[in-house]
Image 1 (tube, helix red, strand yellow):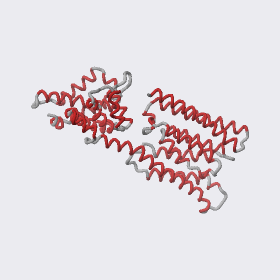
Image 2 (image 1 turned 30 degrees about the vertical axis):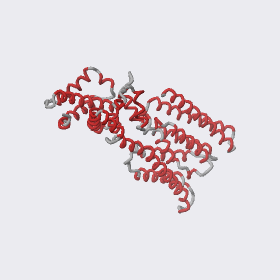
Image 3 (image 1 turned 90 degrees about the horizontal axis):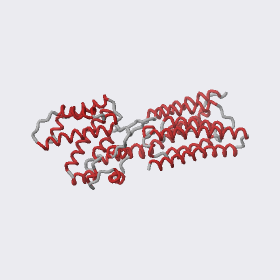
Image 4 (image 1 turned 180 degrees about the vertical axis):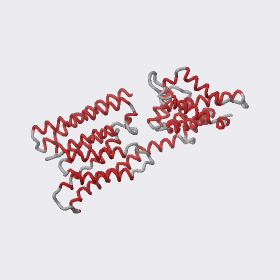
Length: 401
């Protein structure tokens, strides 16, 4: 599946490269540019597009961590945004530069890819607009690139509870200052409200685009994932109820593992929602007496699990040889190992007195001595944090009797 996706993406990005040159060439020709200007604009646009394509393919090769949010799994978002902004960048050359809403467009490009791609592609589009203008100047380029970079820095790492008021206000204020510094101050006219109308319209245009886009982005990208996690991580979710009816022992093991592994994830600052999901559902194959990934993945696909959760589940159920495993899966594995070990001892003797600290130390030390810790992307400090948290839960383990 991944190889087919890779070929599709390569073809798409290749087309993006040529489309950029064709569109800029077409606009340059229709605007009556000289042959020299047409050639220059086309070459520059191809260099810009080539840089963007290289960065996209590089990010794709580096995996999910190279993209913001879930953009790795939805790469055509950026492709669509790129084409729309490319056309807009050509059209902008026909209107006064004071109208250009590039600050908001930088944010859109960055949130649909990552910050560095957003900056490079946004800068490229401003360059195209300036080149296509009748008399473009460097000041326009500086003004919009500075505003765009600042806005991207302020709007990075958005979460469902992120307050966007201050970033929006600061971004618009800086855009207003730059518009005044690069345009209004150099006009030989008395400062008046008429002179400020176009800059004010620019600010309003940016504000409208930002508010509409950020609301859509929050509902359909940020909140959608959060809502799905809240639903599937509810102990009354139908799939978990089926597990409880099928095997009460597996059900409670999953619940106990999820509870403790989530505490580890919160302490380490890793993906606690995915950790809980992985804890709850990696053994869901018991419903059909199956264990292989290919046989159980339909449970996750049919219930619309977030893509990242499916990736952790796949890593846990069918780890690939030679691939470094995640901290999230290690947190689940060590927690479940502790839970299973304690439950087995209580199964042999319900009134057994267990030295929980020694048991946990032995399990963790064995992982190190076997060299299995080398398979995980975890530091010794983080590993010790996992050990410390699990050793704290002595009262919790008594409930496992």
